[in-house]
Image 1 (cartoon, rainbow over the protein chains, first blue to last red):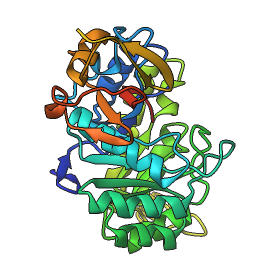
Image 2: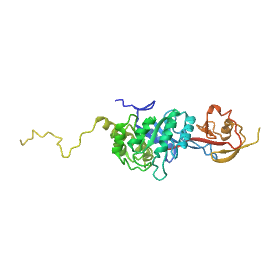
Image 3: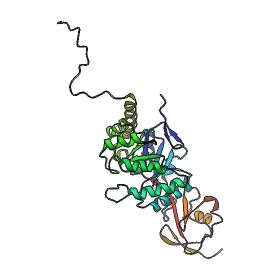
Image 4: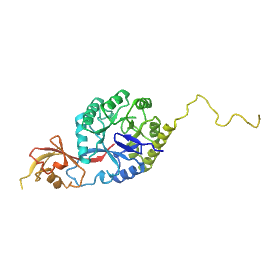
Length: 258
Length: 69
């Protein structure tokens, strides 16, 4: 069955987007990313270390010809810095599909939605295809869609917290009202969280810490791969209705004592 | 060859003998790297590195991609 994930002008078969942060080394990043079978991977934009400019780089291990590179604006706390960062990313690799995140404070890493909307407007006007990290507010999600973002990515819980989905109801409401893909970004801690997110009907899940901080990163990457697939299939299949009481699975007639 | 030029590169004041961005990248050994340059808050397209002269006091950000979520 073909179940294509379309974002802007891009198409993917995998509904798992992975991050490249927090890994112990580049080889593990590469191995876990391959195990995940993800086709899109986020990267951060940072200053080159001028005192040691020649040392090896993430993109020596993650081939931009093989993966869709999704530059992010992690660490940006205002619209101006986010726009500058993504302009640089586009020049570096020619990437126009980007992950916008403008943070509100360092303790929660919750988004600053006012600055996020401002940055999104500028980036859309400059031709970027913006996938935007936001909170689980359906009103803000709709606003970001109206601004022209190609995907809206509500958090499940704070970045790196691994706490699962705080408010599955809101995620479902956001998805039901959206005309662009909805990606759960942040908060997924283990495979069941990813499956539950996908069962809500969202289009994809973006996962980093849960894989990078697992004891066995590659095994967790395959667990997330399978969970995203399982959750997606369960959503498409349509789950049974819940009942208050039992309902026998075996026929209730033809008993030998009748 | 001109004297070295003092610029602000990635937040540090440094001197280079390079007179344009192509030479600066070569001086840093970054020719093969996927990088981008912002000169005084404006991104410089790669095609213009050779013709973009360095001036004393220029503020340059030179970035690359690292792991991130």
